[in-house]
Image 1 (cartoon, rainbow, N blue to C red):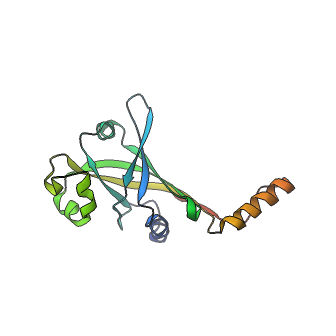
Image 2 (cartoon, rainbow, N blue to C red):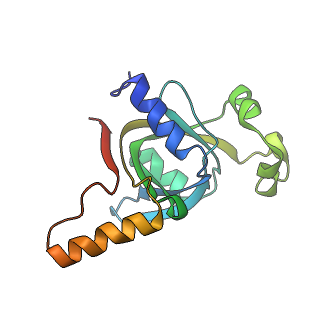
Length: 165
């Protein structure tokens, strides 16, 4: 069951839909954090993010004992930064893989959907946080310069919001 509203999920999805790569962070048994770029395939209506991964990657083994993950997205040119926390699960679901498949994925999985190491990574979104200035670089720089001169934190330079938990 989602811990956020449909409107919150739609808002989050609309912000990251054009940011194709997320930095996917996991922890190993020693609680050491590592990150790697993954291509976001979909955020579904149930609040799940979907990725294609290889079951031979070390981090996929780490997910068996440490399923808590974070995926961060950044669109620097748009001044958008998003952090998504959730629980990961590896699945072999042919129908879902066919639904999400696109020819670019074949670069990583030359045997396509029949690649024996191809698995789906499903992240159940638990919470998210984003910072979105929505302003031009000049407006943001002016607000920051004003704050530096006045000694007061910048205001009205964007939106910062939490969803979930």
